[in-house]
Image (tube, rainbow, N blue to C red; front, side, top):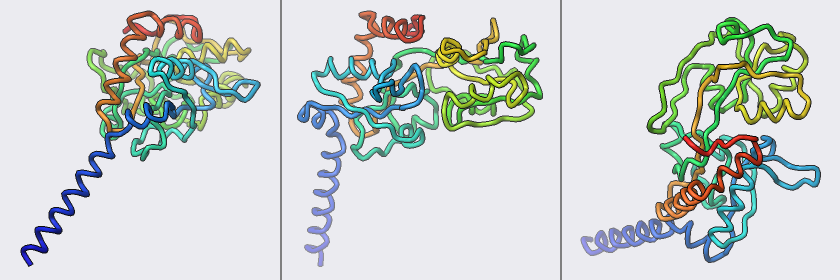
Length: 275
């Protein structure tokens, strides 16, 4: 019986070791296949979206392609829902997530933060005819946000960004009602109908708001007031520290040699790469 237990224990140890060996194989898999699968969004301009030719384009797409180029591999894209992208446990379906993800304490439990690749100010977006001038003017009003994002966490006063050196979050708005939307552009579609028709304001990344205005939406950004400023990270499954470190080094190189500054300027009209 003791021999049987010993054999079972040895077998369990072998299985556990084999599982551990397979768990950290992202770097080997990517380099052997010479191909990398990136999880991202398909409807978040200018970060990532489908163009008129049904091709993925945008800032996050360009960043992904540059990472792949420096690794010497091809890149393809998958567009899972946001909860799947940020929830980890990908089981090898994706190698990286490049979707302008905010590093929060909750997400740190389930995914690796590979590296900060740019910073995004979130702004109060108003209809151009709105009379609001300060965040206090939005107290009791209807605020629109994209669901399952830091905008939603912010307006609900539960935002916890997991990055060193950031100032504390200030909550200056007491909304009367919060309306959530499944896509980043949908709140703007309601806001464009008029001040107070469906929404009084939207809280969104400055880049997204500027892109909507550029595309003819009758909106404006509240002057002199950021809602908050957040770092954005590339993410990876929590299985391969060597892979995380490898891509993290590439992101640092892209920051130092000016590539990230060039790409943010290309897509946003500003250099958002510096902290």
